[in-house]
Amino acid sequence: MNNTADLIIIGGGVIGSSVAYNLLHDGYTGKILVFEKDKIYEYSSTPRSAGGIRQLYTTDINIQLSRFSLQVYKDFPETMALDGEPAKIDFKQRGYLFLATEEMLPRLERHVELQHKHGVPSQLLQKHELLDIIPELTIDDLAGGLYCAEDGYLDPYSVMQGYIRHAKRLGAEYIYQEVEAILCDQEEVKGVRLSDGSEYYAPNVLNCAGAWGPALSEKMGHALPVVPLPRQVFQFDIEEPLKQYLPLTIDPTGVYFRHEGEKLIAGYSDDREPGFDFNWKRSFFVEQIWPVLAHRISNFEQAKIERGWSGLYDFNTSDHNAILGKHPGKKGYYVAFGFSGHGMQQAPAVGKGLSELIRTGKYQTLDLSPLRVERFAENDLVIEDAIV
Image (cartoon, rainbow, N blue to C red; front, side, top):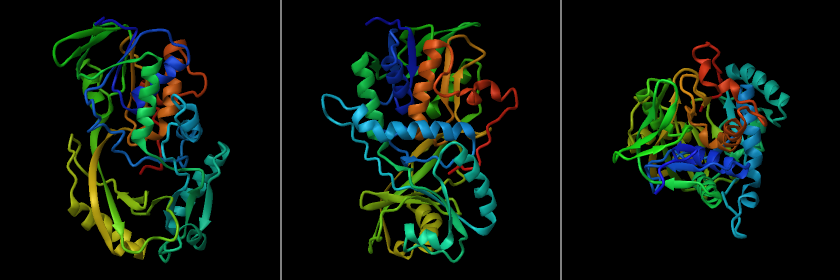
C-alpha cells in the first residue's frame, strides 16, 4: 500500500467525512487518506448525538453555519442518493422550542432580532401559544418561548454513512487504524504515525478527531482549550401518548426532550468531570431528568426507561464553539474540533468551508474565520448564549 497522500484526515465521523466528500465533489484532485480508529463507530460521537438541527443561535457565525447546513439536510435524500437509492436521514422538521420564564424573555427578544437579520423564521410565543405546539404542556411557570418551525431532528448515523459512502465513491481511502501521533518538524507537518508504528506521509493533515483530537494536537506542542465531556441521553416510553409529535424542546432547567419514532429521548448537560466515560446511569434519569419531565408534561409521570447511552462532546472550555482552519503554528496543519455538541448541526457547512480553504487558501461560501485558531491568543472569542 502506498503510504503517501496529499491530505490526511484524522477522524472519519461526520466532520471528517463531510470534508472529504466536499473536497472531492468540489474538484480536489489530490489523494485523501481518512484514518478512523473505530471501524464500527461504536464510540464515535456522531451516532451518539441527539441529532438536533437548529438555527436558534445568538452569534452571526453559528446562525450562518446552521442556515447553510439546514438546506443541505433538507435536500440530502436526493443530492446524496447513490445508484438511485435516496439517502434517507429521517429529518423531521418538527421545530425547536426554547421554553422561557419571565426573566428569560428579554434575552430571547434580543436573540430573535439577530436571527431575523439572517432570515431565520424564529417566533417569540406567548405562553398560551405554547399549547398549540404541545397541548399537554404545563405553562403556569412559563412566560413564553422561542420557536422555529424549520428546525428539527434527524438520524446522525445515516448522515455520517451518507458522507462516507460518497467520499469513498469519489476516491477517498478509509483506513481503520488509530493515529498515535502527527509527524512534524519545527515548521510543518509531515504525516501521521499509527499505533502499530507504521507511518503515512502528507504535506497536509486535518485533525477531525473530535474529543480525541486535542491530545494529538498537544503532543505536537499545540494545545487547544478542548476536553472530552460525557453527555448522557435516555430513551423512554410513556403510557398515554401525546396528541402531537414534539419539537426538540428545551425546558428552562436545560433538560431537553423530543420524539424518537413513537418513543421519546431526553438529556441534560450535567456537571460531569471531563474524561472518556461511556457509562450511563439510570439513577441520573430518575433523580435529575424525570422530575423535570413529569412537571412539564403530565403524560411523562408514567415513564419507562428503555435504554440509555453516553457520548462525548469535544468541549471548548473557552467559548464553546468550533475551532476551524489552519493552525498558525505549523504549516499544513488544519483543525476542526471543539464543536461542543454542535458538530452534527454544522457538518455540511464546515465540510464546504474547509474544502474551499484547503483547495483555494480562502473561504468563499461562508467566512468561517471567526472560528479561527488565533482567536484565543487575540482574545476575540465567539460567545454563544444558546448552549444546550
